Structures are given as structure tokens and as C-alpha cells.
Amino acid sequence: MLLTPMFVDVSLNNRLGQAVHLGVYHLQHQGRDYVFVAAPTRQASSFVGKNAEPFAFQLREKLALDARRMELIEVREVNDSVHLFRWRFEWVGNSPLSARSEEITSPGLLATLLSLINVEQQAAVANA
Image 1: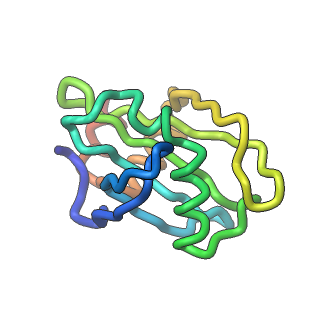
Image 2: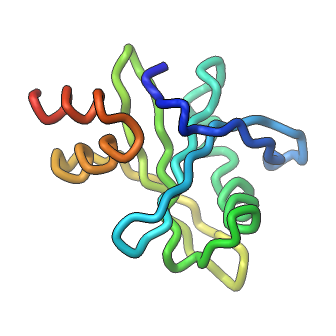
Image 3: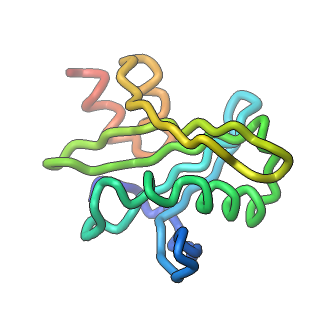
């Protein structure tokens, strides 16, 4: 996988209450809390999507984050390239609702986010 060792294996509960593992990397950048998540490569691409709300809730709790500053970014590796998806939620109190995602396609934003998780990948994107 193209991810750096900054990702930590974190145990969370999926929507069925089963323990699952995700690679998680949290950092603060420009006033936002970026939480990058990567499902194990053997999981389907919909793994995070089916569990986005419980994952967002648990990660916000574990990392003691303010939901208004939290950015959940899913990292997917497809055919040796990395794709990033931003997850958005409507927060009601501490509960994330109405999860939806969008692939990050803006070259500038993509390069910036990739540089936060993998300098070599960022250089490849910048030169593409």
C-alpha cells in the first residue's frame, strides 16, 4: 500500500457492532482536524460507506474532536493509485447523520492532502 507508517491500526465497531480495524491518521492542518481512514485492502470499496456514521461518531469520541472542525477523508487504493473521498455529515448533537461522500478531484486540494499523508505520492501527482 502507498500509505505511510503514520497510519495507526484502530479497532472500531461497524454498524452491526462487530469489531473491525481501520488505518487511521489524525492531524491538524489550517484550523481543521483531518482524520484519514483506510480500510484493509481486502475490504470492499463500500466498507467505509456502509459504516461512515458509526465510524465518524467513534473517531470523534476517541480523538476528542469538535465535529465542526472534523474532516473525515477516506483513502482508497485502486490499481496502485490513491483516491481520496471526503465524507460529510449533518451533526445532530454528537451524532453524525446523512453520510455522503465525494471524491476529491481538485488537483490542488488532492496534492495538498496527499502531501499530508505521503510526500512521494504528492510529488507524483504534482508532476502528472
